[in-house]
Length: 346
Length: 175
Image (cartoon, rainbow over all chains, first blue to last red):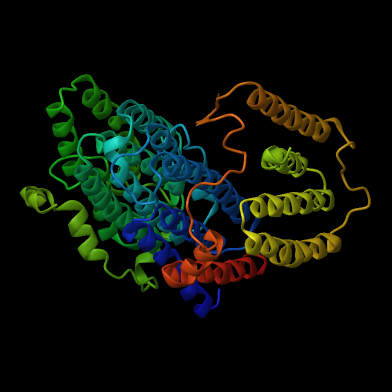
């Protein structure tokens, strides 16, 4: 894609999300989400092959359906409240429709089927934008309507998402599909806490974005898309194997890494609201996620898989991919736990 | 009869939407769009929006649909699928029309219909005077507000349409 066109399209993606974040008029929320959707289609299709076209088509169809549902919810809200401002008291019917629509946009179960297929069909950097930036706008709208959402609906979708994110990722060997199921599970954790404390959802989103950003950057640095080619990282950059170890453990939510912060805070908030079985269930199904992160760690860091002799020379070459900002990102995604009391600034 | 004109027009509107949603070939779908555009214009006219109604004819039918017709003509196939070509299209069309007719009969009989939200039978679809709107046409005031209070909306909408064309060019580039 020619650079000027790429810049214009990226600007539109960014301004679409910015419009959703900063507006108070429901129509502008819809317009921002549509701008975002429209402009990200050519980014998904950066490589013009049929797989990418299929992925972009699937993404467009599901997100357009979700936008239609959102518009229906907005108009029902207009019908009952008589005005377009984003206020706290939504009509329950409108709130349910908007929640379903935004769940489709995020890839929450039971609307999660597009996430692995779309993420697998596109290039690694487009997948990065899809799984991190595209989550910001719908979550901000959910944050603003969170007082009126039916908690049962949210918790059902959250539990299903965490379970499906865990079980779905177990049999995968493609890194992009693994990250897609990881995204589904993390979205589940975010929606679980939304009914009780939306601030923890923002915390989870920020830490999830930094961890996923760092993970994708490491994969792009190695130019790998499968677990078996990731296992050859010890040849190329031994330091990256250590970083993958810490990052995967952080994604799995193990203390003393920063991936533990959101899980800890969410379980604390849920128990403060007198729910005991729910956080137990969520924590246990999160172990499924940890299993496939462990598998990645095992093949990459903890064992040296056999390879042919010409693969053992990769460390002699200069690295061609520049990964800017990667060291600070790794530090943020792994070493933030002692700073948890700073949560009071949120 | 004039009191029910909006109701009748909106029923025809829905039936023409059904006619292209049942997925015949785009040429026949375009015909459904023309009917929908004309009837939609009439509905808007009944609420006093003469400027917007004629805008539908000029820009939508006379601009966008003409371009659509030309592109469809460039991509014709020897045996386009009409509504009576196969059972699938005919079945979908009949289902849609039946659903709309049943809803319409239900609305006319009862006072209130609650499908997704409550609407008061035929009362909401009948034209009536909504109150004192002064000496100015509400529609003209709305269009003026679009360019005065709604400048940001015009900028965003114009930018989105421009980027839409850029996106189409990029997607159909092929290399």
